[in-house]
Image 1 (cartoon, rainbow, N blue to C red):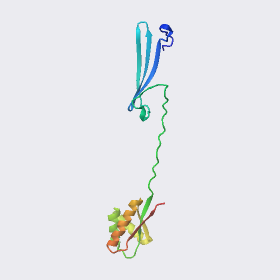
Image 2 (image 1 turned 45 degrees about the vertical axis):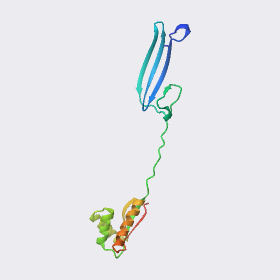
Image 3 (image 1 turned 30 degrees about the horizontal axis):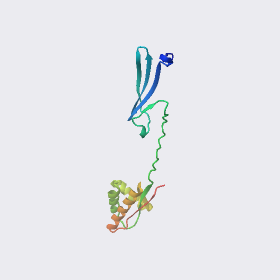
Length: 166
């Protein structure tokens, strides 16, 4: 733009410099040109706001000259969190615990409806075992222990076990 102009003593008439400003999450650029003319010094400023620059923590609030530092976008490292393994809570059939009591324990501990509890109890009675629910390991063990303890407290050999889901 000012490349053809010459100032006094053979100096270039125009000095141009681009500045990048960064503060917090906002940044701006400005092109500042000084023109050494006979009438005086003219300063032309062209500024624009643009999206935030990616700066490191030590660069916060600094003025950076374009070309002095190359800002490369960093690839974010995403840590993949593994989901916890699930465990099945299994009701084991016995010939001594009354059906009504098993339904009562299933409704109280596993929060199932009357019909669901009856279906679980009948399946365990016919097949010998039945999967009641699937939870994370610690929750499954806690529920199985509490349901088994409820049967023991009432004097019945009611048994719930847990095993990992495949």
